Amino acid sequence: MDAREVGRHFFERLTQLEEGTHEFQYARNVLIEMNLSLVRYAASRFKHRGHEEMEDIIQVGTIGLIKAIDRFELARGVEFTSFAVPYITGEIKRFFRDTTWAVHVPRRLQEARVELARAAEELSTRLGRSPSTQELAELMQLEPAEVAEVQKAVNGYSAVSLDAAAMNEDDETGTALADFIGFDEERFELVENFHALAPLIAELDERDRTIMHLRYVEERTQQEIGDELGCSQMHVSRLISRVLKKLRAELLATE
Image (cartoon, rainbow, N blue to C red):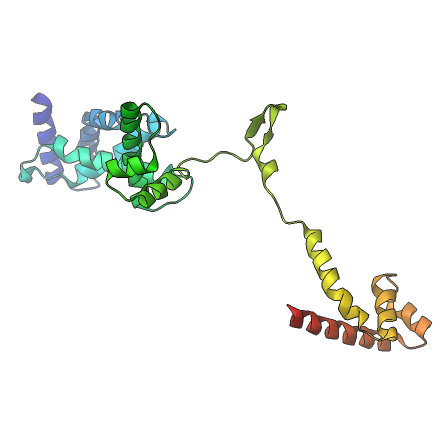
């Protein structure tokens, strides 16, 4: 009762003091300190949820407490405790929703995750085994497809580092998960391009094929090709440009 009276006194002071003054901030800080037990109580309900430190949860809950203090009005005749708890728990739930999911999923699926966990625990205890999707759907009053969607979304709640080791019988040290991820081999595209160009090059006349061979297989300079063919370097450059333009157009036409 004494604490309520003290709290009521400081709430009255907040309505009388100018915001931003030292006196206002002092009264506000006293109310925060007085009601931190509400934050600790609300935070304790989330201690087994995720891997967040309790200190972080309390800090987030304190933000909710401050919002409640700033919006509380004595004239409404409501106990501050009843008014503040929803603000505190709401802020903590928002924190978990926005920060603990490794992959973003729709809010309805995030909220259904908790219901799914409760249903699975209840059925496992009742049946003595893991429940089926159909059994979960009947208890949760959802379609099996909706339950399957929630089950799939649960996989996005936490993530494992690609540096984590996947253990197996033959390797005691394990192999990093990153080593199992496939990648595009750049040379595959080279092979594809080669097979696409081969018939087009075969259709070139002998001089053009010779120029392409000297330039891109033997890697001769344009001057060296000109000396061998008895023409200027400038003419060789024009011939190469013309052949490349022709090959490029034909190659694009076949895609």
